[in-house]
Amino acid sequence: MNANGNVLWKRSLSWGDSPLNHLRYYVNDVYQSEIGEIYLAGINSFYTGKVFLIKIDTQYNAQWIKYYECFPENTDADWCYTKVYSLTATSDGGFIMAGEYLSTDSEMFPGGVQSSLVIKVDECGCLEEGCNPDCYTSSAQVQYIRMNHLEIFPNPSTDFVRINFDAQEGSLKFFNQQAQLCIDKKYNVGTELDLSSLSSGLYTVRLNADGKFYWGQFVKN
Image 1 (cartoon, one colour):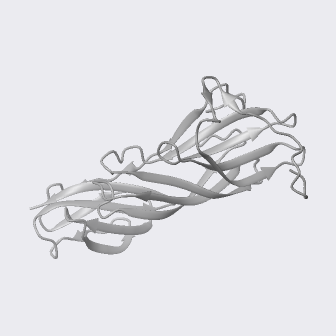
Image 2 (tube, helix red, strand yellow):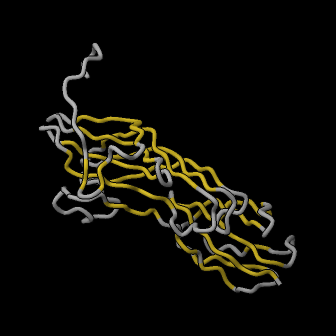
Image 3 (cartoon, rainbow, N blue to C red):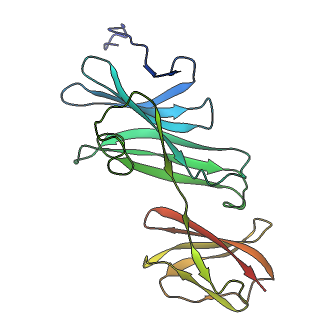
């Protein structure tokens, strides 16, 4: 549209056997490059609220679409979603998308979680280098942001645990099987974590460090 709201052109977008016009797409931000390429960022709410990024070339033809899904390992949640609200170009030709992730109560997220989220991709929409080498695809592609596993030892344990992790510091939370937050403290590399305040049982540990989520479980005897 122009500044007066008049339609200048209209296109129907599709990829292979996956036309977009029968799904629910919400475009939350738009970026246009200096040469006129258009990028659309938002969510597809028809299934599980996947984030999408679409590139449209200067002839107004779709070049590629990428979907981004958070934590597919979180399989026992009733439902969850990932949303983005803004799209910002970066100096290396890629983009940053800012939004949020939400999960209901699950093994991975006892008590559920709602957290801010930043996704960084390259100029071809890739989370990891080389996923789209020609910067074009004839079919929609899904990329996953995965939860990293924490090594906790000894496990089972009685008095203390250590976490095998290289980051110098982070935010550490312990949850029991009733989704109650039992320990909430700053993590420092090499620190022994005192378990004297915990009852016997299974605990889920969640660490937020270096802009990523890590999780693991251990048994307190």
